[in-house]
Length: 179
Image 1 (tube, rainbow, N blue to C red):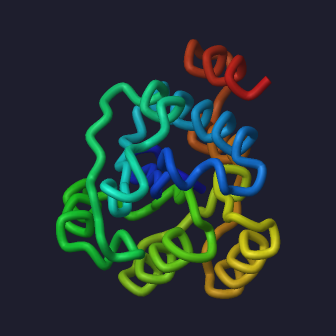
Image 2 (cartoon, rainbow, N blue to C red):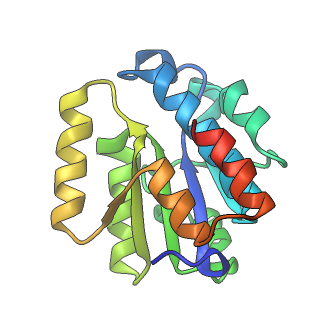
């Protein structure tokens, strides 16, 4: 079970020039923005990566707007763990369970997940908050990561798992987000 005191949200490369080419990008972006808002209600910290900003642009406005603080880390490696500053930022949170979201599932998300698993992190792939240019590439990456030990979850499943109980102000706020 996810424990909000040991969990980190990682948003990988949801950038302006790449997103329009992503399969089902409007729905994926909407779910991810709502997921970010939910994790912020539950005080789960977020790290945002951006790949080659000069060529791919910044994180899309819908995701920036969902964040309380937008402080992305630029990387050149496909894997977030392949970038020293990014890997250090993740390690500095001292959180061992990673909610992994973003694009492209079969490249940057996949490689990040593999490296996180190798380093002993628990990887929870939020399958309705990831995508690739094609559904086939997204689905292939999900299957491979499932076989490699990543946990599959969804936006709603993860939020309710982090919450654990109903009847609170957090429950009311998160419930509005998932409807």
